[in-house]
Amino acid sequence: MAATEPDIRLHGIVKRFGDTTAVAGLELEIARGTFYALLGPSGCGKTTTLRIIGGFEDPTEGRVFLGGADVTDLPPYRRDVNTVFQSYALFPHLDVQKNVAFGLERKKLGRKEIAERVSEALELTQLTGFEKRRPAQMSGGQQQRVALARALVNRPRALLLDEPLGALDLRLRKQLQLELKRIQQEVGITFIHVTHDQEEAMALADTIAVMNDGRIEQQGTALELYERPSTEFVANFLGVSNLITGTLCHRNGSRAEFKTHDGARVALPLDRLDGQTVGASMMCGVRPEKVRLLPAGDGAADGLNVLQGRVELASFLGVSIQYVVRTSGGEELTVVEQNTGADGSSIGPGREVLVTWQPEHTFVVDKEPTHA
Image 1 (cartoon, rainbow, N blue to C red):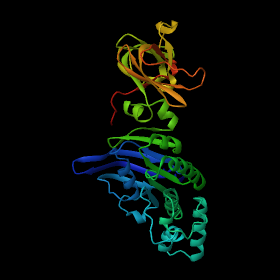
Image 2: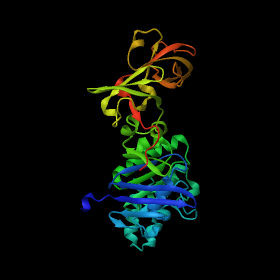
Image 3: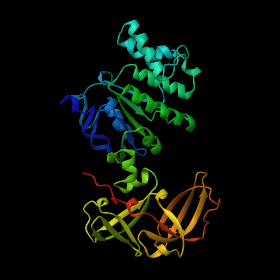
Image 4: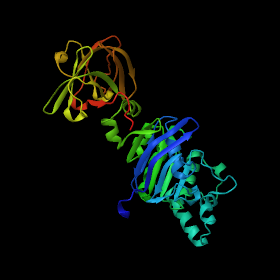
């Protein structure tokens, strides 16, 4: 039983602040050694969920389990987790070595063991040689690594990361993303990372839970969430999606078709459907980089997955060109084409075009999230 017990389990977690429900009946299981991201906009409940795991907030309802043990009523210092905050929370009057050793000294471990474990933590976070520096003498990225070392030196069951890279500039953030991934793989413990940055979550996490209104709308790998979003919210929060409404008009063999309000036909694999029957209202989507633009009048105009439109905006982004196309049905679609440097030209605003994509790139989403 112990081998299959989730490292962290939340059962029926509800958190209310007065009349506001921050977390609404959350069920969550995280396996040992997983890099798990809670992703969502401000106010979605992700930080509150992390604080409940760490013991900094008490749930209004529900239970918290760490390694199978119920820790709901235990204070933070009695839970086998450590938290790294965006603000670092280092002791300014202590040097790096003493900051990292602080927790071990409070546990009254032997001097030799403390020295060995601090040395290991500093090596892991690439801070060897910085032992005698004070936080004020270090960059933001270095201070964040000190905070990581201080948390990891305690060898917790899980490390809780509350937007730890949010205060850093873009270059440092990208660099520390790689560092976090490397460290997690080396130590093999569970990391739970709260972020509103979709690219950060996709770069780091084995599993991403997209939160909205105190609930998990969908969880899975970055690939699963990107290629097969299940709700309109997930499709739009994790990347950019072109969403089109219509009616399911045909399902046969391995393929289904639906018709948009202006009569265009869109094909998709049958396994994208979730029980919808012919005549059902649907919302389908396709990612911008999966779409191609063709000149108006191309022979594909009468085929499936072809919408007529006009280019409203063309933006050169270096590695790609982004178009905004208004379809004849009124939808505003985004198209991203790789800059291959073929002739250096792009399709300018005002051009009549056809927007087309392969049926296997079509996904189906719920118009509104389904809450149990």
